[in-house]
Length: 90
Image (cartoon, rainbow, N blue to C red):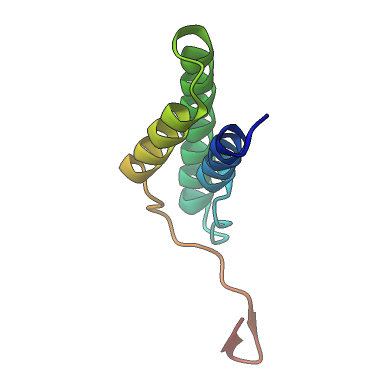
């Protein structure tokens, strides 16, 4: 694997991690539901993009770009969990 190919694969892995690394939701039931729905949609999108890329182009850069685009289209809309201790947010 040459440096260019390796960089493309690293970019793909980073895009996958970024897509699936969501902040934990607050303890509100509605936020938890939104968190799991978003995680499910993003995981499905990643799976579809990877499978399509593997079947058609086999170019990890295109898959990484598609994942990043899809992730941007589905932002976090729930309230993330905040760790509060003695009135301070960590």
